[in-house]
Length: 638
Image (cartoon, rainbow, N blue to C red; front, side, top):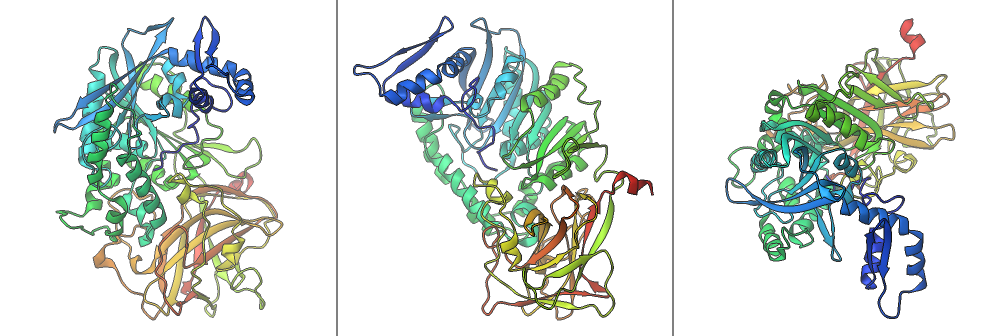
């Protein structure tokens, strides 16, 4: 839910690196620059500027000119829109100009409901959505009004926030949508854009069924709040602590752009926001789906999770185009949204993290979608299969596939069983084998003394989601703390596309524990690469019916009443890993690694001495991971 985005390169119309830092340096040196008559003009202070700055201005003059001319092609206005309870919502409106004059004909409007400031003032310059998301400039030029609103309790808006995704925020979205539709410059057709939190608010807005909301384009949007904060019961404390600190800073500092130059109102709003709920403290106090905090008349997850409003969102029927990536925190959520909605919908899945969008033309995809639904233009967007996804590590030219269903037709679940290892393990605790042959009744057991240094790293899908680094390092270090099970080198490529499901049969010297399972790709040099993961807290292992279409995956109620300690006899932990489409090349090996800690990304209670965990691999207690394998064309024919 970070405010950072791969497309946050300030400077509409600028090529290469942003010119905004250069403009800030020029401003600090009292150099005035302006565009007139298709040329860049500048006025230097007495004494001039240093040689480096002069050289930069000369080298980037074309980019600076393009930037200033682009800004001149926009009419920008700011507004307060008063909600039903008196809260004032700050809204930016950006309208296109033609030949220096604002377009007067009514146009469709696209807006975002922003948690991270609709616009900011940095060293006297205002950065709008066109600066942080340059692709929006093409949308504006195509004949749309672009708008952005500070959510209540944030930025320049007044109000106080409770736990995130509250019903007040959804009702605000209805009112803002209809306010936009009623303006003289709007033709009554409204859409929404944005990623992460700004994607979630689109679904929540759709659930209120504003008559003028004709389509949305949510990117990387959460579905089930509990399953994100506490997947399988394990607390993602690092994410919520860092994200909570970030939004607290944004809410209570005065960097948000004012409405009509009213800086006093921004200061007053920031002071009011100090009463916002501490999101980390709130999440830490709610360990179960049915937990209640002080003063709660119902479990907060039942009220705040977007998944609890899926019926209303589906009933509204607002067309939805989702974008996500295989290493996003909410890639599973995107498939759940797609499965639970019934109206027109599309889903694009790339080889991205939460903040990556490499290789996709965001402006083009948004225009195809909104031109169809808001302008009535036949763009062909609804003639395509609804799901398009990229196969990771696929041969060049064979990366992208489309499908009408998920998982794709032809996917077969292959059970990969855990087997024994050599006498002298070298790369992990046990160096076990992974095979599609079920073990004998005799089988065996692997012991793991829990290692609390185990970690998948500090540049993961989880850190990326709050604006931290991303780029998984080789998993060999984590493997050394783990029980691992590895196949022989593959004779032909193998594609895993869908949702892997782990079934671990475990015992432990402690009544509880966290079990992390990683699917890895081991290359010909023995380097182990992260593919996907899942986690289960043993005491939360109970299964139950899901309150929504869960894609036939295991669902854990994670209620206080269903919590159960580990018994002395082996019990099964059944849970899914994040979905993936990954091609394992010939000569590579598949590996499953099992740890009981992910130090940098999840909170696991440490015990001394550390528990000894046993993974069973015999007879009725055979541990395995079910991999969704899509056979090659020739294999499917046979």
